[in-house]
Length: 487
Image 1 (cartoon, rainbow, N blue to C red):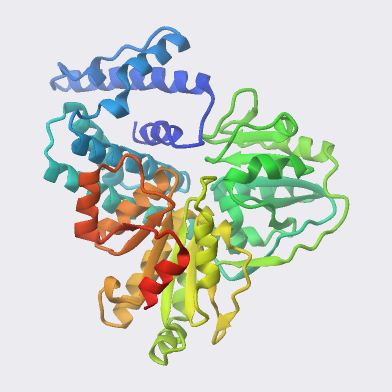
Image 2 (image 1 turned 90 degrees about the horizontal axis):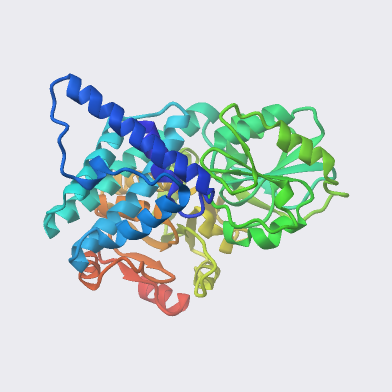
């Protein structure tokens, strides 16, 4: 039930599953598990007479009937009549979607903790009953961030325990002549299995989007045919994938409607899905992907488009902590900026490119998640041999960034909020929401958020965030924010 709950919630996250049949299956399976659990509780002498609608809900007998039920329930907009309480509940529910995603990723790699599942079950049960006040809901919302820190820790342990600690790695942005498969999403295990199955077949494997940091893991980079990175962030796939001359594998999320020009080349696996697209099941037999790649032309020639550097997770950065500390003490390093988060197509996101371009030469920029594709190929040079642009990893590697900040605070014998560190986050979907809640749960303040504030944050809830955490929207220009931060 724990694993299933996370999978079902994760499927509701932005750009994960667009296959109606799979949601019909999820709903029916939920009811089947619920009724089975009732029987177990009843057999143990427990009470199974619940008034809550969720405990007695009967899904319609067809997909159309279920859709009508969903429209009538309008769950998210009916969480509470009070605007502020509804805002906190919506924030928590979005956070739980991100939390469920990280918990699922971690569980796939054998890392689980009952406290994560317990929080999800208890909170959703609380919201089913209702009656929470503002103060209680603030606590529940912040706890979502606290529990997510544990989930990200589990995922970090799964990734590094399985594939080793990331090391600084140059990743080509061009292509190598030959057959090709590009892998997008977030799942390292799926990539590893594909690399194993394509060995010796004359196919080069490329990453896309948040798979870029995979090149830095020792147990993945050891494959000779794991070549380079193709394209940028998720929202550009409709422009980039028609030009890719091979098969395209989606893991986890970030799928958009495939254009007819490349739909036949698209495959999904795990929780990601699209109607009429071939889905690779739990057996993870990627033969259809491989056969499609071999049938397509591949790249006709080698192309050189430069390279980018990745692999600056906590182990690497803390390995040069003495240099960083000395750099700060000698004033060679004036300030640290963490600039990252989820990217999107909304106007205003050029702010993040301009921000990084305008950061003074005596400052370091740490980045993570797909927000980095606004500036990931900028050549910013180094300070005393330390690159000024440090790619910490995927969105879940916010855990690494937090550990770096905590370690530096310990070295300087100060609070994280007293470090010469500013955080500028772009947000789009629910994993960015739960990472923000994690930062709040740690008491980290003065975070700038853009390109706009989430619509589900009510004015009064925003006031609470401003008063307690000094959270603020980005300024109209990057220049203005840099002037405010650096003086």
